[in-house]
Length: 82
Ligand code: SF4
Ligand code: SF4
Image 1 (spheres, rainbow, N blue to C red):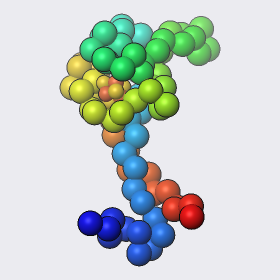
Image 2 (cartoon, rainbow, N blue to C red):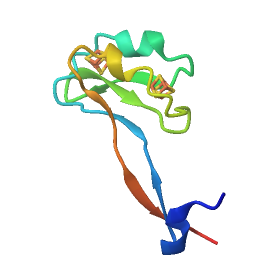
Image 3 (cartoon, protein in one colour):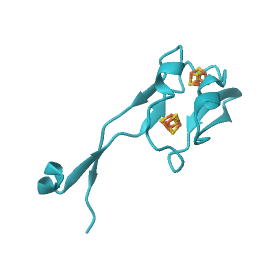
Image 4 (cartoon, rainbow, N blue to C red):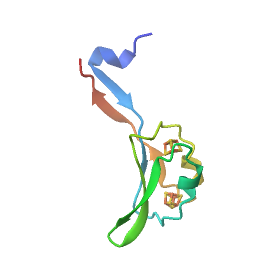
């Protein structure tokens, strides 16, 4: 079935992101990601988690494991490219 959004030449993706404000780098989300799509990085002398979008399949399993509620899916509109 054709994606109904295609008639507007637009699709919506739902990438998973981590709100870096409040991340304490505990690593819980890293341990449950079977794609190894979450890494720790140092930003402004703090260690935070970040999703590597190329490895993430947007399964959403990590979302409930952050006790701080920092992992979310966001809707992003993308123009279709012929
Ligand atoms: S579980 Fe939450 S606080 Fe812990 S590293 Fe992941 S995003 Fe940061
Ligand atoms: S959504 Fe799935 S693949 Fe992506 S970072 Fe979370 S657990 Fe890993």
